[in-house]
Length: 236
Ligand SMILES: Nc1ncnc2c1ncn2[C@@H]1O[C@H](COP(=O)(O)OP(=O)(O)OP(=O)(O)O)[C@@H](O)[C@H]1O
Ligand SMILES: [Mg+2]
Image (cartoon, rainbow, N blue to C red):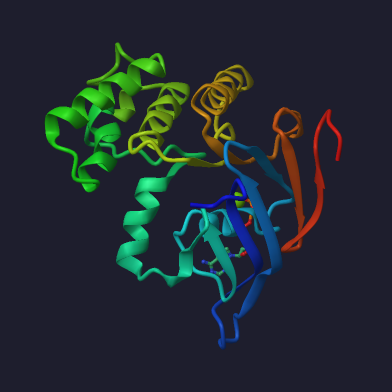
């Protein structure tokens, strides 16, 4: 366990795509990124500046070209791929702009899926999935498939799914990007609730400056570097 309270501790992260090929492209140039346990941080910056690339690294979906990453005090890159995948599914929940739900199964089964990989038996995972959907206000849509749900409803299913294995960290990549402003507001309110009531740390990528201002810290990226860090409405 970390005694520092740091959940994410990334140092000097470099990411180069297509290394050694003519198309080689370095998109992160030595990024230091931190987040405390239970912190709500946003990442902003122009399209192409490297936000999703950084998010994929925070989410252990990819490995950097250089750099170190400790999660909850544990060195992430010491783990082999299979161990890392299991570690990720226990510790991190993902929410994407386009929901990434599985189309042929209902809301309940979408939310139960990550628990199946975690070895939870069927009855328990379905009960927990139903409870999570109920908490998201989706208790009357358990057996609807994604194509029978509105955008806001799909995102609530995706948020319920992100909570399936009770992770410490939620990673949201433009979660309101495909929603109208009223529905986006509702999703943002859910994030505040999960942060304040369940103590989830949240890293939130957004192109919406007003939503970023609602989080505890705003990290501004530019051309693969951290260009600035602000604490809206608080001391720096
Ligand atoms: N798998 C990949 N292979 C090669 N280049 C990539 C790959 N993924 C991303 N890139 C490049 O890396 C740069 C950063 O992309 P990234 O998706 O991280 O940007 P972003 O800040 O999330 O942008 P947006 O706001 O548009 O989502 C871009 O120039 C992109 O073309
Ligand atoms: Mg992106």
